[in-house]
Image (cartoon, rainbow, N blue to C red):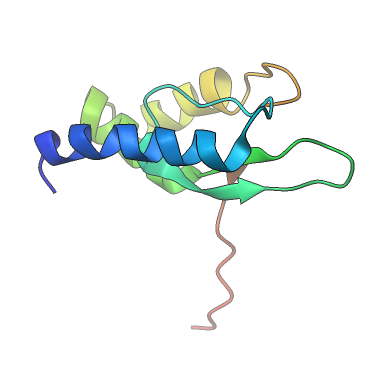
Amino acid sequence: MDQREKEEERPRIVDFVHEQLGDSDAMLAEGFDDAIIGIGYRCGQSAILVYDTDKALKILVDRDGMTLDEAKDYFDFNVAGAWVGEGTPIWMEEICTTKE
């Protein structure tokens, strides 16, 4: 998918999120739409967005020209480390259970 197609798809993702979450306090992480993997639910809490950490790191490397180490440092402090209220997204890391 080229950049133009991604830009055309973005409004659909944002529209879908707004349709699904309604008046939820869920926050979008600016610039990381391609890392959205789902919606998370917690007992007694509003629904929130769930993002894939590896996809977010790839965005920082590809879009911003960071090395992986730079992306991890930036991400840990400025993205995953940012509390913006009850709607703060969840950043998911996959657990690999495959035995070598």
